[in-house]
Image (cartoon, rainbow, N blue to C red; front, side, top):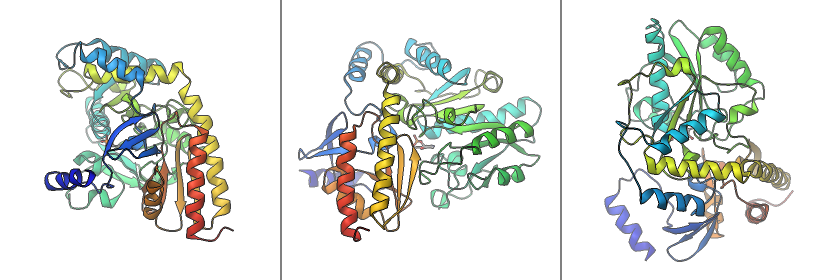
Length: 399
Ligand SMILES: *Cc1c(COP(=O)(O)O)cnc(C)c1O
């Protein structure tokens, strides 16, 4: 049965994804089942998306209710879930206003556009360049791949959009040196996700904030992966004692429904007047209802705190693995955005985990990334770590 689905997919779908040969049929909490009924513990969570795991009863109930009521009317009109979600985000963040869209790339598009327009409206038309980081990831649209600091993302799509400069992540002096008369903003992930779960030094983002203030630049944080509790705080910037001027969200915001958001301080947000930017589906009732349900569960059930505690435990256990196995080069991450850098290729490890019923993800060839639902338990972490211990034991003799 599975093979037939895969053959059908390979006949008709664009070949943009290198997929694993699993067809998933259902999920519950941190477990997924394939069409053969095999169970997997999910340490991928749809790439840091399903904070509350799969088929959460409160999200399902909210969706059912909204599905019976109103799915979509466009942004020619107001709808209540969209208003409530914007209020929720404004109340708990640095921001005064929210623009809704449908993905991370779209949220970053909105950030890039608002930075340019903000300076145009202030009469500083010459300031349009954005400094981004080497090794960053901001999306796959033309503007966001142009802002991405990885050649492999840009390959074959030249010419990229004009107006992006790159400096090494976690190097405040390199950033300062790159600023020129055309620079208008800095775009940075608080922890680089796709780039390899790279955490900055504790003082780096405060230095970036200060540099932006001195040069009159907007600080734009891409919290698409780090936001919504992933790192142990609602937003990762809360770890670093700073506030951005613009922030983008997506992945976990609606626990699996497609959504993006660009949040900004009033002064910056005012650059987006009527007609300046738009999205047909942005903030549509069904999706914003899911987001509100997910965020309410997150707060009422202290899920972020739980994730922070399990994340600290998980990281300790990864350090234990590193001590035991020569093949482990480094443990990285914050909260439940964790990485394990290997001295060898990660793909065989991912395959063997899958055979043993664990989904993990490998990025940058040799970094295992763990981004499970925030409701993952210590027992589930222990089970994965036991599996990894055995796999690494086979790769190299234990130290
Ligand atoms: C996933 C991601 C994006 C792109 O989001 P899409 O929804 O795939 O467009 C952008 N920035 C970061 C940091 C991400 O992790």
